[in-house]
Structures are given as C-alpha cells and as structure tokens.
Length: 163
Image (cartoon, rainbow, N blue to C red; front, side, top):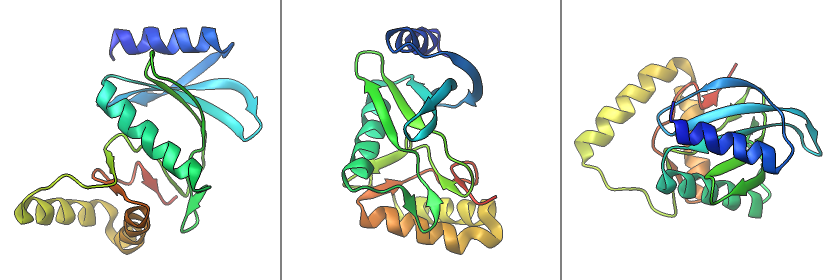
C-alpha cells in the first residue's frame, strides 16, 4: 500500500469528520476504506488513488454516471459519487451489494485506447474464461457502458459481480 494514499485517506476522513472502520483491500490503483454511519444514499466508502491520472479518469466516469442519473446498469447497481477531493485524490462513493458494477480505475471515458486486434482477442478470451457462463451478460453490461462512452478495460468477476 502506498503511504501517501493512506495519509490522504486519513486527511480526507479528518476533513469530513468520517470514521474509517475497515478496508476491503487495495489494488494496483488505490486503496478503499469503509466509513462509519450512513449517508442519504446509504453506507459509503472512500478510495484513495496512487496516481493522479487514474484518479481523474475514475472521477470523470463517476461524474458522467451522476450527470446521467445512472444508478444501475442492466440490473447491476453502480456506486453513487458522494464527494471527492482533487488535492488528496480521494473519492467518496456509496457501497453496493451484488449484483454490481464498480471500480472504473481501469476504464476510459469517451474513447478507448487503441490496441492491436491480437491484444483484444487475448483479452476477450481471458475475460470469457474468467466469467464463464456469465460472460454473455458481462458483455451486455460492457456494451451498455460503451453506449455511455465508458470503456472498461479490466472487467473481472470482482468488478462486475453477479453473486
């Protein structure tokens, strides 16, 4: 875990009078902590990022979803953006229960990065294997996101959760 990200989480929590209660974990882009109490939209989590570029990308996607009033995609809940801090690179979002779509740190807004056909075929085969019988529904969710000009390049059963 990145020490700066932990410091930013603590600073955000202090600035906003939030109590950090547990971390479901961290990934290659950041770390998440649950916060105590409820918001008007339910329980929340805060996520600190290791990279400004990734933070801004994920923030812009949550802002797009918020502007469009998107709370679910094909019956899969999507976290709602509750707050953010550009200085600390922290987002505050609602918690969701399966089925859900979350974690847009590996997604792109408005245009997908270009990869060779071979790379796309490898990725698609990997995703199909990971999702198994759920791959067709995952593909439909990815297509719905693309209709919103959101290109998720790291779909997995962890961020498109069925059960």
